[in-house]
Amino acid sequence: MAHMVHCVKLGRELPGLDRAPYPGELGQRIFDNVSREAWAMWMQHSVILINHYGLSLADPNAQAFLKEQVEEFFFGADAAMPEGWTPGGAGQGQPAKGAPRK
Image (cartoon, rainbow, N blue to C red; front, side, top):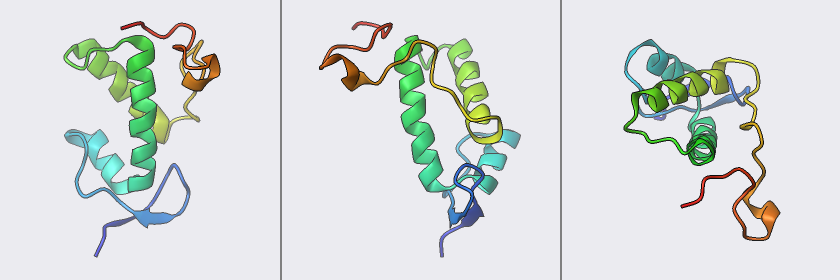
């Protein structure tokens, strides 16, 4: 039987995560209050943040930034897209304005 939560992001009872995604209090809050569906939404959002800001996940500052962002995404006001971000398809296959080039 799936672990069920009342999802703080989607506002309804849904299957939760199989385990806490982070150690500590934040990970437990996410486990207790975030559905799998909302976690998938966060994963997509985090990729946008990583690409937009050119974050390296090995950098402790980037890790701290993402931890702040995940907390805001689920428990703060509605998460906003990064300043200057536009959808990738907006430029007819070109990188979005301001996106880091590879």
